[in-house]
Image 1 (cartoon, chains in turn blue, green):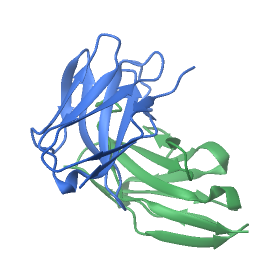
Image 2 (image 1 turned 120 degrees about the horizontal axis):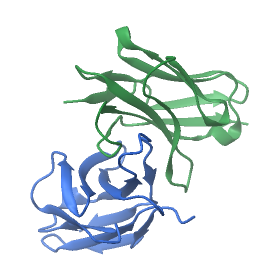
Image 3 (image 1 turned 45 degrees about the horizontal axis):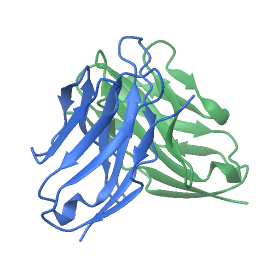
Length: 114
Length: 115
């Protein structure tokens, strides 16, 4: 039973560039949430995708956007990168409608902006 | 808006000592509460969760937590820690009647257990 996978593992970008991060949910899950975890802090909710639409969004600017594909995998895009975007980006998957509120987290993508 | 406060940033214990990690949340409505653990080099994983019912919940590896509604607290406990419990622990909350995705996390507590 495959867990949540994320790619790439590490990424180094320059200020102003754009980046795309990818996530495949746990087998059988239909909902993907993205979190940003800065050094020394807890994960912060960015947004959630279900049925290929953004369903909930945290307090992040429009530079952060996403997409969910018919196979439930998801992408996180960040435009016009800032130094402050350097963080670990976590993807979590869950299954809506089952009453099970457990999220399963992936290993994360470490983004460094220079 | 929800917020979560974890009182201890770094806790150092000897093996067999008892553990209690504090967690307080701020939210006006009914909540679901979680404790997650991240062992060195591993993914964030769920330790235990509270939705309703018995306020004392038991999780994996001998951990338990008690929800005290009047204190807006959900403290994590373990009677006797082991070296393998060395990890970072996160408390999280989401509003009840929302799905699992939108959780608010505390900033974590790093636990170091000395052998």
